[in-house]
Amino acid sequence: MGQKHWFWATLTLSSITLVAFVFAGWELVENRFFRDANYLTLHYLYITRGVASSLVLTFWAAWFVLRQRRQSEEDLRRSNERYRGLLEDFPGGVILYDKELRVVEWNASAEQMYGYRKSEIAGRPLPTVPSERVEELREFMRQVDGGEPVLNVETMRLDRNGVPFPVQLSLRPFRERGEAIHYLEATYDIRERVRWRDAMVELEKLTSMGKMAAGTAHHLNSPLAALLLRVELMRERIGDDGDLARIEEGLKFCRHFVRRLLDFSRSGPVNKEIQDVEAAVQSVAAFFQPVIQARHATLTVETEQGRGLRVCADRNLLETVLLILLSNALDAVPAGGEIGMWCGPSRDDQAEIAVRDNGAGISSADLARVFEPFFTTKEPGKGTGLGLAIARNFANEHGGSIRLESEPGKGTTAIIGLPLVTASVPAEGVLR
Ligand SMILES: Nc1ncnc2c1ncn2[C@@H]1O[C@H](COP(=O)(O)OP(=O)(O)OP(=O)(O)O)[C@@H](O)[C@H]1O
Ligand SMILES: [Mg+2]
Image 1 (cartoon, rainbow, N blue to C red):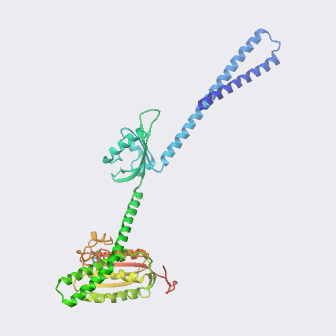
Image 2: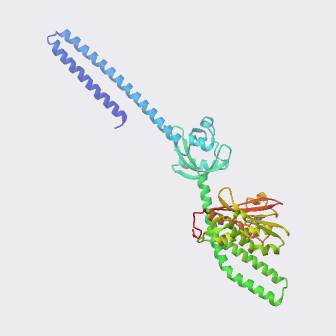
Image 3: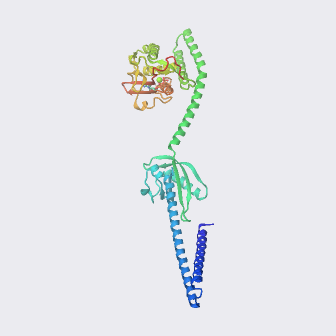
């Protein structure tokens, strides 16, 4: 039964009960005091009873209706408050607009998301739809008019500064007592989600690219080594005619590329062991010294400050990375250039190894990109652009960091930081 029916049923029943009580009361009074009254007295008595019961009924009905109305108003106010609270606390931006896209409602999340306050936007045309998306919105409106839902579609909206950003949008038609139609738009800012999704796609692409590269590199490794050997033997046998030297140089670059690819896409366990930083620096410097001398450059090694420092790292990888930094330095310096290696503690409890050169330096535009895989400024056939990407992978895998400081024309310093191993860790301990 509806609320209206209940109201009338309660009013009628209570009124009948009241009248019954008045009549019963009168009957008692009449029996007690007017048993022997004459016709006229009785007549007045009945008139008084009629008037009294009508008055009681009228007051009762008036009070009942008033009480009911007050309660309805209170209910309405409460439910209004509830819906306003729901609207304001709703996590997405909720906007109500008419067919001409004039804003009617605008909740707190919409204020936050778009940067407009409700007071300045109410009654004005919706400013958050980019011009190229207006037709799309009209299509959505037609769709919901036709009874088709528009739920969780991805589209673009503009904030107060005109900056576009991705949102997830749902649209519903909204009719108030058959009046002109309004549209209720609920939007969520999905910038973060889109960023993560793009990163995942990128990662997936890189992973499959890495797998492919690793497979290819693996297959090329042995034939390249065999070819190089053959060319060297041919040069010994028939002497150098220039062409063979070029073939050998090309093959050496291919081998370099294949090794870089293998290092870059290397997967599998990292064999982390406690390493003495000074010893690692000294051994790499000694290994690379002849190459530096052949290019008429000089190498100075300062390790006093790093004496006794220990880090936990894969020795092969650490040496590979130091060789990468040294070869970058060597490529950057002219004949007679100076390269320095240094190791020591950093302020934030890391062991730092730095490779410094007084070479060409790096422009700030390039500096922002040097760690990107395949970014190289070297001519084709000279650089793979994977050296620093490998070095960064190494630093990440070891909980460390790598940075480059450079001044064009003056030189570059590459610094690797690795977490220090404290004395309590056993020196022979193998950590994975
Ligand atoms: N010490 C440096 N001085 C000047 N430029 C540098 C230095 N180290 C790196 N760069 C710049 O960073 C780029 C990327 O270096 P990265 O080691 O990743 O690749 P690459 O040296 O070009 O190739 P590869 O290491 O395979 O020879 C280089 O091409 C170079 O422009
Ligand atoms: Mg390099």
